[in-house]
Amino acid sequence: MEQQTHILVVEDEAAIRTALTDFLEFHGFRVSQAADGRQARQRVAREVFDLILLDLMLPEIGGEELCTLWRRDGVQTPIIMVTAKGQEKDKIMGLDLGADDYITKPFSLEEMLARIRAVLRRTDPARAVGQTFAFGDLAIDMAALKATRDGRDIDISKREAGIIQYFAANPNRVVGREELYREVWQDTLTDLGTRTVDMHIAKLRAKIEPDSAEPKIIQTVRGAGYRYECGKQEGTM
Ligand code: CA
Image: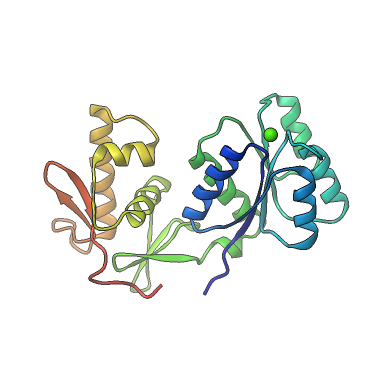
């Protein structure tokens, strides 16, 4: 089994910490938490993480100081700095301290996920690529944005990957267009949005269904939405 990517979430606001943890675990990461700078420093001294999400404003030891201390101590773990200030000066300072990227609050969880993947790819391309999960009779590699069937690679877009991921997490039930649009596009459905969803599903089917005229993986439920059929051809991954 592939080893899970282990992320340390350093955040003093419990609600944000919990939301980030749930979201990242849902996306297959292993997550540990630290609620202040001191806890974070202790954890990093004991364990090796693959990535640290570091809030800037923290009790005990602030994010900037932590970053400086870790880099001085030779900790090479990629760090994404989370800043609420949103000032250019702070962003640049964060990067000067040795952070690999920064993100400004408020951020969407999808944006955070994209940043994490980008940093992981950049810092260790070998790790993120090659981890797959089963979707129908396909193996999906989210990091490489690739679907594979019988050894044949199919390129998928980021949006298509998001759609696949949502269906994979919600198998064998009807997913309405409104729900899909809300979860994948992070927006409220409009008429244009409805067409956008249908267009993306059609494009995705053309890529991944053996016969897109008779879709078996993502089925249409008339008047209700779509359903990912899973179980009859359960994968072994
Ligand atoms: Ca904070």
